[in-house]
Image (cartoon, rainbow, N blue to C red):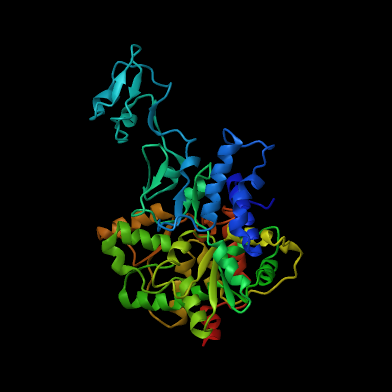
Length: 469
């Protein structure tokens, strides 16, 4: 078993691995019906009520592993039959209720949702409660608490609610496809669609040159092997060339710094979940989003412009990148996107022990391009890019670490009270190093990315991008 943060991730990985094995063999549609039985044999214990339900849920996971519901534009989907173990949630009265005479909770409730039994203990009528929380605020014993489902708690843009069957449902108009709910759901009832089969079909075509663009956060993943061995593993999978997305970050840093100096105010465009959030929640600020593409797109465009017929696969920690690749303006450049979870499944589908491979080389970018992976890295790169280009402009950054900080900064900007001229928005707390598609998450990932940045041969941005001219 490889290193994953949770057993849910490991289960998801096993499905992806088996799908990938069948795709390599060209027997996917004949063999995928047997995947649930292979993963959960009849003689092994199951986390569900019975092996049959477990297999039914695995069948739904297989569908998502081969692309999911094509009619649903969202990359994130709910497996309804797996979403039945969480309590409904909302405000509840605990046994800390003392049956006091004051009844402040009843007085403050404008919906008449609170009643009392013969012992004066409060009860909440869920059909009337609107989750305002007024009762919890006035209870002198803090006996009323909010029990929010993990997915709802993870979703900071409030795109998740419960349907009539008490299963989670996603509002596609609000969802920014960051994948926070995917990582936090304890039962794996929410998953991101996978395009691993599409990537395998490209790699099987020996006449195509398939380029892998790898995100700099890869430096904190695959901890059981060296980064150079991961690069060699990618080549053995069939990738023609492996390039750092950090080189695209260097390209973007130079252009975005110039744009910032010209316009005087800008919000970043590197995180697709943040960009979507600005457009959906703060449309009046959308005009200030940098017109530069993300590093993934900038580098993919360069590859396609200079290598006719090339195919490009982005590999990183981000589910929102899968959504970005579906945008009409991005489709010509990025053919598909894989997460680190999916890359691990790809390696193991070929029974490849990357820790035994020779070390390849990955050195295309600067220190500043590589630190784009963590919160604050883009701002550091923008300041450096201005300096290298001899542009006199004082950057007053507002570094937003997670979507809640993004919301606060955008709200201030919408009211013209923001003190700053550049909003760096990262939907995931910590930045890309904690994306939903990571194998591991945590503070140590930041240290690994900074270390990886310091190992770059090119110490400044201009030198790194000079190879493209």
